Amino acid sequence: MIMYATAEQKIERAGHATRWAAGADLGRGRTVRGASPKQVALIRRLANERAVPAAGKDLAEATILERVLDTLGGWTPNIRLTSDLIDYLMSLPMKETHVPAGTATPKATAFLTRLLAERQAPADFVTRCRAKLEAGISRQDASAAIDWLTRQPELPKAAAAEPVTPGVYKVGDEISIVKPNREKTRVYAKRLVEIRGERLVETGEHVAIEFEYAPGAIHRIRPEHRMSVEEGKALTIRYGKCICCGRRLKAAVSVERGIGPVCITYFAR
Image 1 (cartoon, rainbow, N blue to C red):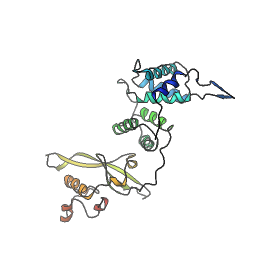
Image 2: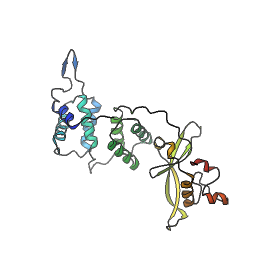
Image 3: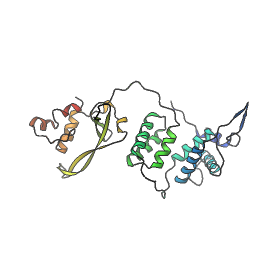
Image 4: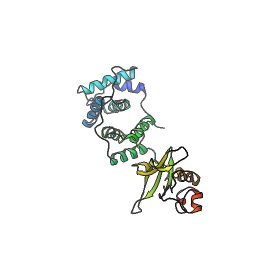
């Protein structure tokens, strides 16, 4: 079980921050380790970007807010308190007037996605990060999340998972096709996106599709997410062409199946 600091523990850490401030003498030549310059800079940036309340709703939040102000004033917190301050500030919403400075690069979003799958983090933090990834996370938010996640312990290693092979998969409401790269050394995922097109469906809508590369999506896909032939058939009939290769169906048997004879191997039987 992953254990996180309770409100009482955070109050105790923050309330005794002066006694256990960075550089405090512990005896026998030992001193309390303080926050790094990078961590202090992160606290300052988060305090500037986030909607920090004027007062805490309880003693724990009020105490943490006091230490945030101390840090902004030039005081250096110890390493344990630093983690609490960053956790708290990361949990706050962005200021309405704050405009993210650009979107994170595909490399950064892929790294963040991998860290979310590998590191121990609260479920609400993971949910918020994934929602931002879907919407197009900013460079600053991605950098802050990556900085925090890299300091978290790794999740326990599970038994070797069954590899994901080429096919069509559905995770939640997201449909992806997994294909090998040119060198056949690894696989990657492309997400199905509906666009305006020429296919007239039952509702009178014109629906066509395209597949766009989804950075990091391959790490969320598991063998059990592979779509069944019947699910693939329904989608292929809806779009009027093979869901895997994009070719329009001509052979009678293929049309009846709703999927081509080769691409049917992409689905669970």
